[in-house]
Amino acid sequence: MLAKTQYSKSWLIFATIQNKYMVDVILGLQWGDEGKGKIVDYFAPRYDIVARFQGGPNAGHTLYVDGKKQVLHQIPSGIFHQDKVNIIGNGVVLDPVTLKRECDAVAAYGIDVKKNLFISERTNIIIPTHRALDKASEMSKGESKIGSTLKGIGPAYMDKTGRNALRVGDLLDKSFTTQYIKLRLKHQKLLDNFHFIEDISAWEEEFFEALEFLKTLNVINCEYYINDQISKGKKVLAEGAQGSMLDIDFGTFPFVTSSNTISAGVCTGLGISPKQIGEVMGVTKAYCTRVGGGPFPTELFDATGEELRRIGSEFGATTGRPRRCGWMDLVALQYTCMINGVTQIVMTKADVLDSFEELSMCTSYKVNGVETKQVPFQMAKATIEPILEQFKGWSTDTTQIKLGEDLPETMKQYIAFINEYCGVPVKHVSNGPGREQIVHI
Image 1 (cartoon, rainbow, N blue to C red):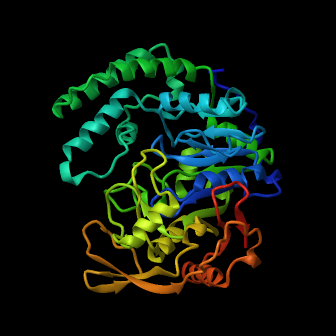
Image 2: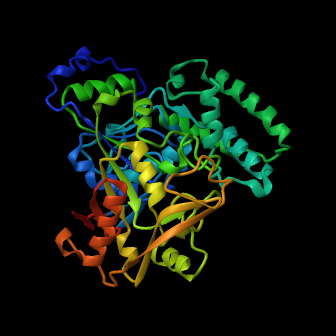
């Protein structure tokens, strides 16, 4: 299982491909939690391969399979389609313990992960001291916490850019244990500086058990494998984690994640060329949510915000933390459509707004007293007042609607305004958690 595989040179013959755009992308346009898991699951039947290109176990993609809730943190959301290849790309940071737990949960549905789950040998590994460093660092920040999920994501990406990381392919190397000890000792010095004294021996025991399981999975030379499959006419769906406003470069820094969550990350996270990318499907809620700290211009602190949280069951899939809720932010949405090159929008949780008589959307910011339609460089330091436009709600149950033409007129007007403002069409509306609750417009 854990072995390099050689591939033919057919990946070079791109001229033989009739459709040159073989990779479509699904990613989040807000601060994560947009419902991407369900959307990937919905579109997966149209593709041969589903591939995660960035992020770690801080992502929680919720699906409903046979009426049961299943949250995936590491495995691509196409895993429940038995004929699909699912790839964890090199842009991901992988927690072997989380992966094993997920594989066990998926196997309970009769899915053979050892058959259709593949992992890039270049994927970086999260080790127990990464988690310890994450916790120690966040605790040291006091009131300035960024809201880390404490999964070791940031420290793992730091070791990647610092050229210290352990990668899945290193498991083939006899010196892996030596490499692990060297990295652990480096981390221990940092933990000593934080005065972190928590015993993590149980974490390590679980980690090494999970490594033995990881060795039984398919580890591939992903960049050759995926390009070889593309050359044979296979269609790839690239799945993003978190959301564009959490991108390490373009998000609300420093309240961001540690990877490139935007479409550009697909190329570096899987080893494909930009010329292969076709559709970029951006997912947004019909309103906004955010977990953890950081700026959130349209956040509601009143009963309306509480009602959005209650109706939408807005609690983190990974952490269980209550999500901050607010109105749709079109300034941020237009920004993320722009930097991702979004070709179509999928609007989720539209049914959450069914009972609201009045709705609002933010159409511009007043930043330090000056009105603008641009996201400022440092949102965390700016004083931002959202300029809101009011809309009439549809005040009707939309959860059973199957056709776009049957959507309430006021919902159509709400959607049309988004289309015009962002210059990108809303093509699908999710009106419930079920697989079948998606309306094509």
